[in-house]
Image 1 (cartoon, rainbow, N blue to C red):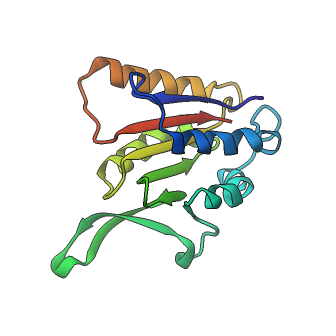
Image 2 (tube, one colour):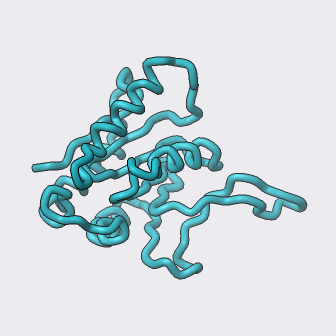
Length: 169
């Protein structure tokens, strides 16, 4: 099995609802593992979507405007939505955002964009980022973990999130 994960902060136990999400990735390992497949992020999401929906998440099922999941960031006059970010999956009860990344997770620092966006979204307490274990010759999962280790250990930046789960596939 090639699925790996790391929960942050390391001083906290992973919540059960996030452990259930890890099980989905483990059950689908044979069709998403980056050591065999070079799937686009949307293909990975499609493979996982039925099981993620069963866990109570809304899942982006297509790129059509009506299928996008928009999480508010800013509200303007008369409460109108002024700024939002689109996410791959969202659970409004546990307040979890899931982002599935592929090749550009580390090379284009997409994981940092995901982190920033989750920090400013309304009603988001947890962020899950799924990245390839390896992309070409880069050990993407390890690089993301090292970055988050430095972020948490330095204690110089306090995040508004209760937890971050990184899943390597």
